[in-house]
Image (spheres, rainbow, N blue to C red):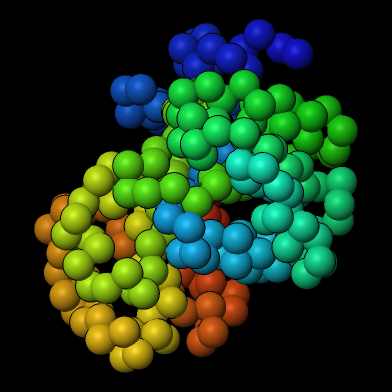
Length: 231
């Protein structure tokens, strides 16, 4: 196990051709995969989004996934049942604790899964790390990921973006999922867009329905952009 896996500041010392990340950000080391975390409340559609990204990107990238569940491997099992990646490209972490602990406070189990994927597979371009379902306070340690996607959905009502929390306000991409259900739960998407803009300033927001867009086109394009700009 290489010691620089656990010390983001040491990774910052490596020279690379891309602009330095913002303070506190994990720099992407050349030759190692971009790591993107996906967080959000239970039932917001994180695993379905991971599956969609795998289907859209697996033919063009060397891709792997780490999932987090408290006591089961449910999310990894879902990905395998749907055949979005071969089994050797999926690692399941059973956190045994609140989901945010394993992605923010003690990231050792997730780092071990990442390192195992890097050791056992051809050089990877991208690792998606899915958090267990948590609340609006869930954020990833920047020692674990380079970018964070936060997923909410309309079933909680159009008030969710204005409730804020670091997942809504500071994630690199906010995904408002299941827009096809808005009429059934009386959620006003224009209100959600307005409130998300107020909370996030210029940070991007993507409205998504995997029923209407199974490829998750907007999120897939954002991931491609992060890869193209060097992470």
